[in-house]
Amino acid sequence: MKNQRNTAETRRMCWKIAFMMVMSILSSSRLMSQSAKYTILVDVAHGQKFYNNPNKLNPSAGSDAPRVEYLVGQLGKNAGSLGAQIGFLNEAITPAQLAKCDLLFIHIPSSTYSAAEVKTITEYVSKGGSLFLVMEEDYWSTLKQTNTNDLIRPFGIQFGENSTDSLSGGFTKPTPVIKSPLKITYHGGRVVQGGTPFCFNSQTKKPFGVFTTVGNRGKVIAMGDGMTPLYMTSWNGVDDYQCSEFMGAVLGWLLE
Image 1 (cartoon, rainbow, N blue to C red):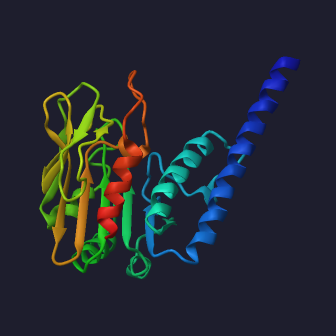
Image 2: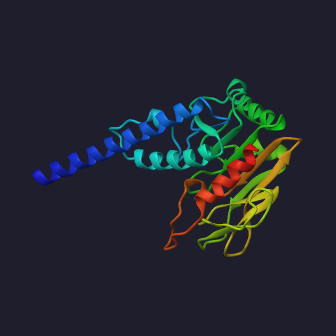
Image 3: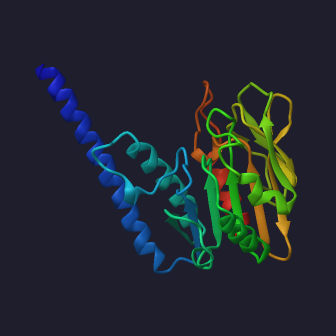
């Protein structure tokens, strides 16, 4: 019993430390916001599977804290190197919110966007905003659960069914988004149609990431696999996936 109590206490202390580290990251972000050139808003109001607002974490819940700490830290590093700050959208997306945003980041939602939100997001991109939208295979979120296709259909891009590719590993080809080839994470995923492909799986070389420009300034990137934006540098015995390099290039292109 004593060992069990000690183990439980150790776990609680670990979660507390992790939570405090998240708060430290947020404090740094607030300081940086005074001189930030860009703002990246992360949607966490539509049943996102991985990203979350660190301000909303309960330290007693614990299990999400290390993951969120890692994601916020890695995304913050990429954003900071580009002169950008990170914010979180906790409620319905409105024109007023996006008026202060240079890039809207949506990663694996699992609930629907209202008609008003769809209109807001598509008008935002049409008027020069940037959208980075990531989906995954049905195990994580289905197209019946979330209407993400409504957000990108006006720009000639659509998510399709689960990919038939089963092997791990992906890569990029040189494009205006990423100038040099990168080794990126992939396992399963969703077909993406339309746009210009730039991310490909290693098995059949089919694309799972595309980009497009809208008018003079609007930009969209849509990905059918969420592992690289989760900074999963290791997977199935491979430890050198270039997630940070990928995210730095993608965010840089979307913000420029």
